[in-house]
Length: 262
Image 1: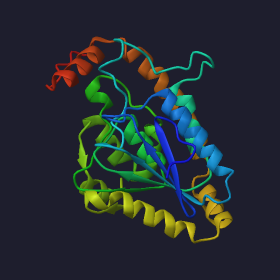
Image 2: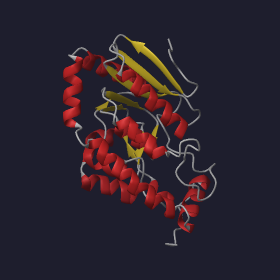
Image 3: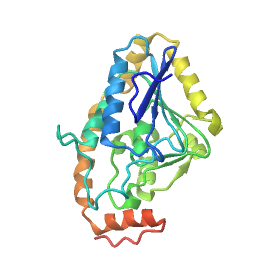
């Protein structure tokens, strides 16, 4: 049963596990409002002693297919909150500063910022039909959502460079092999397996779990914040290039882009 849910993020509890479900059909594209809602929810759960672990999942076909670039204005920069001046990326830093362990249940697409969201979690449960991609260079611009810090920290600098430079898609089984995901199950079992892992974590002393998490992730949020500042700067000018326009057009037309370096 949902509690404290928004139209884009549904929240429910099972014993000491909170389930957060992204609900932005059909592709669960990320927005600044979604990130703000997710951050506020995680911060609230930090203060809830009944919540010891969290599962992040997507309703529908995908976990999160990243940003909806096709329907944005050409050259538009990273989304910004007009009231506060904060960007999608400065809001995303809040996700890394929360204290309780998160298991991502990844099915369908975890692409671009959606990959960044999955990688921000502590663990990822996935299936062979899932697909992971840091597709930014195929779209003509610099990776974002802190991935230049979180992805190398997870799979190593060399493997991260391979995914960034090639923009290739990785299926769930290969994601587990390279350490991008942790557990591979049938698609129908992804959600239940993620909940079981979170429940297993929740059986342990919550202060001890949060303490070891803080030790293991020490400095990550600060590094993430610095990375997003660099990413924002690079993306701002690259989104004004002809290659970016071509990359987005090619994605929309489902064809190979013809980049010119301009």
